[in-house]
Image 1 (cartoon, rainbow, N blue to C red):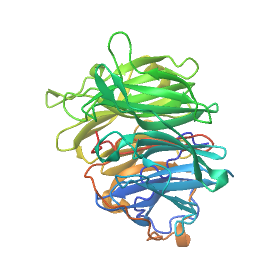
Image 2: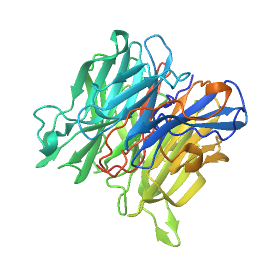
Image 3: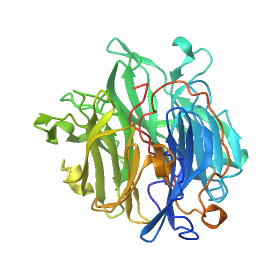
Image 4: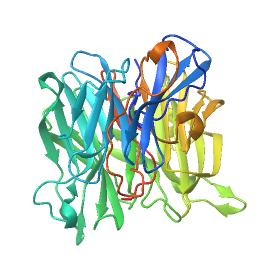
Length: 450
């Protein structure tokens, strides 16, 4: 079963599905659900893989606003669902849920779950959402923005939001800390949520935290990702589970020069955390100039192969990065492994890695493009914005997808349309729904908030 919670919606559940290979096959075995954006409007589509070939179905759903991202999950009956959230820089995202065999008519349209969903995961009758912020009445900052929530949606009762936990602002070292939920992972009946912890808005980032909840969203344990030597995971954006451990990738603060990230390992049994890889320990120079290293993505294949995306933005949003392939054991010991790919000055906002066990494919968001690579990092196929419908914004895995009309691409209907306000892209890869335990969706890398 696909461990990587097929984010069928998380990299924008609907990014245009260009009909790159019309009529290539009937029903695909494994697919990627993606969302694209020109940072004014967006759409969503599917890349379907069948054997060694790929077909792109773009604009399955369109007419989304600037900040729409996708996720996938299982409903209360075990059926796979694709979801898009439109964040309109105010209270309550507009959320659409589809049966992936019918993108013409959503099975659900809701606007009361929460604001700026960054990740999603389901277990039984419940869908859990990690939100970056909320706009609750009486919020303590100008404009009404408050800290993020973990929201529980009862899929067995009409998809009603029935519980929520909000990590309140608090003082630390004379500063105000504003917790923002970034990613979510479900394992052993427990809900694990990753929090970024910025000071004073987003003026600086302090140690991130992982909080363990029970199914009713009662806090059981929490761990701050820092140690006595002063090392700390700042601006953590995504995590992946493997072998009873959570692996957290942190950008290190603002995306840009002089910001260094790291990877932390959290033992689910003890909630002990330790830094296992420091960006400073990955020598990276371009034309003789050192490149600062932040961590933008981490994931695992079931056999323990580990994938790590490490790199840095410049001020113009050009991105220099390297894809590393190693093993869980070597990564735990601080070994990033070998460089499988290099990205030099790629423009764009969306960066991350997502392993698809069903098709033995590593999906890489690489600026404005989407790539499929083999387990060793070897290139299989690259998808351009023209093929996808626009610049990739989010991606998630989908177990199976039946092409509309027997294989032709084309528009499958219109979605919503949030008023496109801000000029950035929600950061972080983020969200996840498991086929019975889905992992957070992959978001883009540069947020107007970060």
